Length: 113
Image 1 (cartoon, one colour):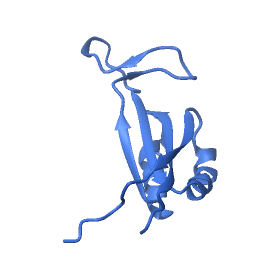
Image 2 (spheres, helix red, strand yellow; image 1 turned 90 degrees about the vertical axis):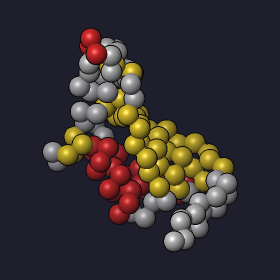
Image 3 (cartoon, helix red, strand yellow; image 1 turned 180 degrees about the horizontal axis):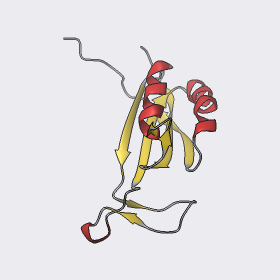
Image 4 (cartoon, one colour; image 1 turned 135 degrees about the horizontal axis):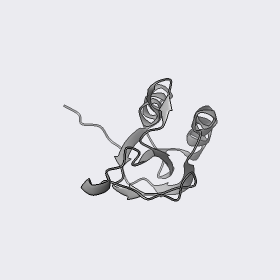
């Protein structure tokens, strides 16, 4: 797959406890991205955060271990493909935030072994 130098980065901010049909929402999003031929996706687990749904700080500290830590799904591709992908996943994200920004792609290559 070839990506142009001008790409886009989508960030999806959700909670670890968010679900879609019984499985983690972040997992469903990544599987959908793969099925749609998106260039790449990464899931990052936050150690602290809060959002629109609650003003309670969720943290990974032992004394107050949260069961709903922040999750960020980063997805890279062209702006057009990401906007189409957003139309697919939007109805399934009940709470959270999605951002889209320009990304300068220096290279995108696979191991040739």
